[in-house]
Image (cartoon, rainbow, N blue to C red):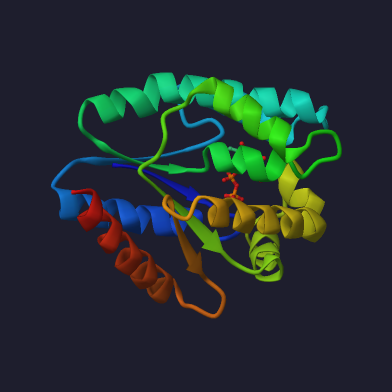
Length: 206
Ligand code: TYD
């Protein structure tokens, strides 16, 4: 299984992906690795720092850097793991690029989508969207870090745009997406709702 977790900054991806990895490993009897973008490959930290903390770049430059990061991540981590029969849970993937890089001034979504498609990265079996109100997510981001990255620093206006893009993307790919409505739910309730939805998908794909 190749599962991706998507959502705006502060949506709770990391917490839930850790719990999901444990559950998936027990459920499938296969080792499960957790990884992330940008930077989830050996030596990927410096590219991550450059993209997230460096000076503001043009939208196209930024897009190509996220794709370069993904190319290396796919080649060195995702594909080798899938080929060994491991499950892979990846925090952020193609739809992060579509949602965030279409939200700037210079690129439209159709153009971004074409460029992503041309990379031919492997398709996840299931994509999970943690759908949360941008206000709640941003208050979490503020409380956990006094040193926000470039995207977090743009704050609510960017997160509102990205959040609506994510909903459109998930609506457009209903077969692939599990959308978890996180507002008002505890961590345990979010997890339970994710597992309930996922169990249905796993049985269908067996
Ligand atoms: P991440 O470390 O997942 O941040 P968080 O834990 O706060 O969600 O991601 C770092 C940032 O990179 C996040 O603001 C989204 C952005 N990003 C893009 O804009 N495009 C991409 O393709 C990816 C992978 C991330």
